[in-house]
Length: 242
Image (tube, rainbow, N blue to C red; front, side, top):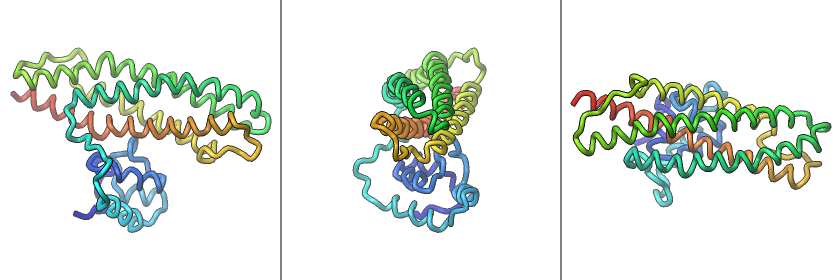
């Protein structure tokens, strides 16, 4: 079935992650702005919708080899995967990137003043994400595991102190949007993570790490916003009806 212009971006990427490559090619946000329709995103970017649709349909027709269908994963497995792969990545890479950014800011900041803002933005992102991930690991994710267990064991789900799961999810999604916007600003300031001609090796390594960090963040947010969160909300509704 061909992809249509009015389909939701986040749903398309959730169905087949190969479409993310196409959206990335055109600079279309598939994670934080995943609720947007294809034609709306194209109009906002001034892109010919037919070109994007053609590339999307070509991607969907490509071989399935090497792709992972996260849609089929049990929610508790997906939670564990997000923590072990993406949360740990953020923790480790934040510590690695900070001293690199500080160094190039001090050495090259006179000729490239944008590095001061890049440094401030990344420090803010690292701080917010650290708190964000702790809230997920201590509050939201344990409740998702409880829901999965209740479904498997046929037991009654005890109501959480936060009312409904939609409450912490809405908070997490709002923070995702903020950090997505912040990293878009970093990408803009760094000219798409392109080091200047006078950039040293540390400069190039730092920009490479920042680009990798953003790519991981996109996948991280996609798995939560477009797969984990909607499925968790549906599971809660199902359990409350039983």
